[in-house]
Length: 626
Image 1 (tube, rainbow, N blue to C red):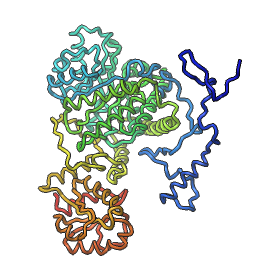
Image 2: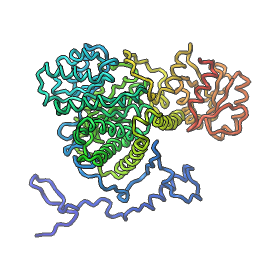
Image 3: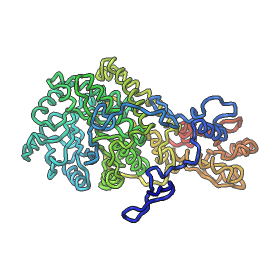
Image 4: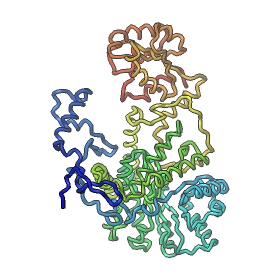
């Protein structure tokens, strides 16, 4: 046979050319292999040019590119095969990092679960039927005092094939009454008990966290023991991580507390007569999915590993965790709510890649009130695009093997395990809630998060960054108040939105005059930065461009607050004289966009990382906005 050269090809039956050898395509084979040290030299060069390090810097340049999570986890800028993590296993087998099921979601996709929180049973029924027709596969129904009255569950589920679209209840203290009403509905529709699939979602620990009032676990455990005998496919209890997430907690705190709740339920269920495996089968875990897609992926992967370890040391076979992901209520905004569509898409992506069994995409207007037909349609179509068009569920654990994701999963699992064991050492989740110790740790994290939000190091698009002062207000029907008294509920954007509300309520739009110095090219960057910051507080930035007479333009602006915007050179040459002239013209406050310096007539400075909330609050006060 004639030897074929590596660059030649051989004909295929279809007449197309194909490489003669499997390794014929050798990308960059003519170049020497790059080393980590070469990469470091390139990084150092870029950092020196940007001023992040000086010529005498002796540390590792990549240390300047490390980011840290609220759990203190260090995320490196580069991961290689040297960072490989072992022991992630296979889908459907302990430790279940890669999936709780051997087939993952390949054959069915994840469960598309929509939430309904109206009191009116007829309106709820209309929304449910529309969603089911549009692709929703299961129902998350609030019932009782903050939702559909328990007696009206049948009306809310009228014409719903509950044997095909499983129902997850959310009935608060009325979980047993709601469960009985649901079972009555199944019986009336002649659905065999052995075929019923539902989640009753009793969650006394979640109620305790929300209300601050202790709720006993024994009644829920006894209900689960009865249900396990009569309805083998029904799950009775939910361990809900949302109360800890909405209180400002970190990912590890949310995971640790949720796993601790699962352990408390496991103990109560075994005391009620179930063995460990049967008890684990009665549990579903609810976790928040955020727009940080990689942390979300790692969270759901780590959660399965943690629960597998818990069930293993409890004497079980090592159970796969049943996971319900909910796009974070804390990350949703009332201002520019359209951006929430992007946030929830990223969150759904992260939860799907992370292997969540069921995902609820909250509608983009959920922070404002009850969703309308349009927002509900967008929410369910988010799933459709990711599943049907992007084929996201077509591969089991698509992030598996990524050195970054595997390390993040491992680090997060370790941090969450430390939080969980600390809770257990203190007497368990109930004791931690009763003593306020857990609330204290969550508050510490919220304080750190608040500071980063306030300084815009954690930017909120459409609110603290790139706000739209001319946006039309979105009006929705109000949502029923949820029980309070326990852990607080926060939304990340609410502090900036409160300033916007204050500014909007003023008889006229508050304004700040941008006193631009030097040529346009020299002041554009800082003028844009300042305008963006002021608009985050509902304050209009009046920018005349490059005025010939700054003082005259200021007088015509109708405001008493000015902000200098220019280059360092123009500040050195003009800032003092212009600031003095503006004050003589009636300015009660003169700010400067740039790092603090020695300018006697400048009353404040705007710079990256400054306390934007403090600046905005002070400016509104200066302008007499109540």
